Length: 425
Image (cartoon, rainbow, N blue to C red; front, top):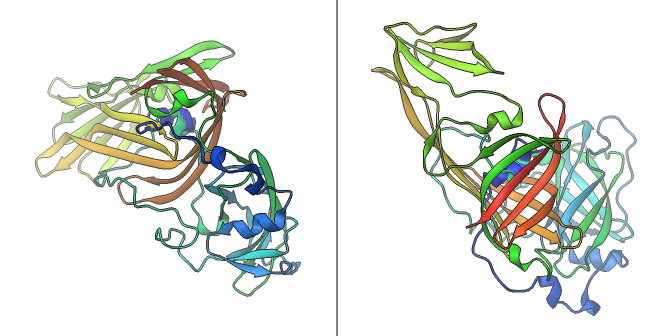
């Protein structure tokens, strides 16, 4: 499973996701007459309305399998996928053998199929067929180093597989009746035109945004607290403090159990002392330079001549999610202090991290379930296709606060309930 935070993904994203100004316009699905809506009951009309990234529409049945082990597909990790009307369905394939040049993709029951050619780039310009426009991506400065440790539950709960040859992207028409389930069959082909075995995956399609009972959700929300519970008993929690340097780290919430690290200068070396699982000084690292360093298992006792350079710390800047009538945005920003080596020796230096996720969302006030589908992310180097989906329970506390919860297995092998608390910005 991929994490919407990348700890338990999407709750962590609470720390990472952000939401923009809210809109009161109705869902696109509400403005389309029933008579003009597409559905899986008419696969031919539905096939005519969809597009597939890098796919060429072709009349007739898909080519027959070559019945060879030169190229073979296995059972996908996801027997079905979620999608939202007017957005995209991401199908992750399982390649058991062979080099994939592309895929044949067909909606079950249609008399045409798409030939997907992976010789084309995955991320296209906004003017090309079947692409996500990146014109609205907000550029961040290039981060000195990347991190996934401090995002909200929403961003953490997702996962992704960006390998071009294991991803099929289908554009879902906005005028499809929801909810609906559409099944597609696909086969891979290699550079010698060998064709794999067929695999079928069904796509569950829901409406975009909320319903009449959830207009209050639209807006931008800030992650204020993360909790971990076991069988209804609260085990750990982390309250977010923004725009202030703190040494408390929320990694312990995810069963990593690191304590803040202290950095000493000892002669011409830097000593980085890390606590783990409650044992102070379980290991420490000796740095002679930025390229000459090694770690030692054991307890380091600071010498009287050692100089404390500081404590590993973090400054949370932003950890928001935005649920608009036309998009989902997750935005995260922090600064950390880490060892930096110069000609003058070791010091603690500030590094910044920024992340932007963009995609779609759907909420049903009857089931009280929210679906977040992130389509691409930007860590400062431009937008990257980074699809992941997460469904979770949402509890309304007030018009200005809600909780998102889901279960996940932690590093200790136990199943915990992770809860993110969000406050309207």
